[in-house]
Image 1: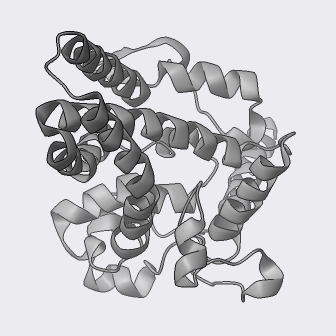
Image 2: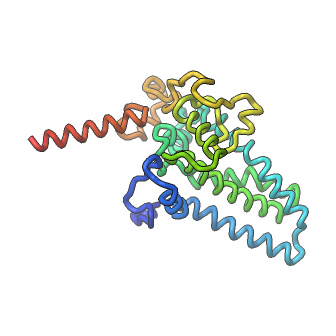
Image 3: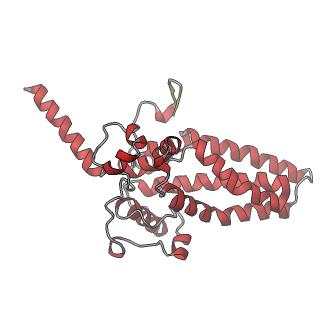
Length: 274
């Protein structure tokens, strides 16, 4: 994390690629990332306020409980809709303001799926989205305490989703079978075909709406799995993402791109030695 020119903790002058990290390294990075720290702070403040309101008789336990339950229930549906119809849409790259956001929160992640620096959602987009998705429902069920409780549940759920999303990108086979299946399904979205398995860590709505697939045998390989359709031809019409992307155009396959970079470095070293 950087604040101005200050770099903090685990994130100081380092690159993080999840296919080269273990669970302990991921956990250390996770809890020092600024967005996760912000979510935890929001959860502690809102959760503490709700507990105080319950103790003072200013909140209904039923209303608070219903708000939390509703948040947990609707959360997978909200993120499915956002992932499928917003992040995988073709309109965000067309406008300068949305193109910058789309590049940061989705294009960069798909073009380099194991780069931890672009895996976490951006705080300025995620927190307002969680508030909009949870607080109105909480308010309807439990008034102001219900809205605050719903926000607390939303940020806690976000933390859990973000952690398991990181685990899905780690270069190892998780011990728990259900986590292995989750990882396999999400990796298919990133490395085989992006037009399905939108649930990230919960694939209920993919199964309900017919966008779930288990692996390569169930769906053709997508030529746009790494660039989401934003290629050289699209960039000629809508250049905003390309202008923000160093070394554009480049090989969008992250494995091939890293091999090319390694070969280029080796060639430079040989030339320098000669």
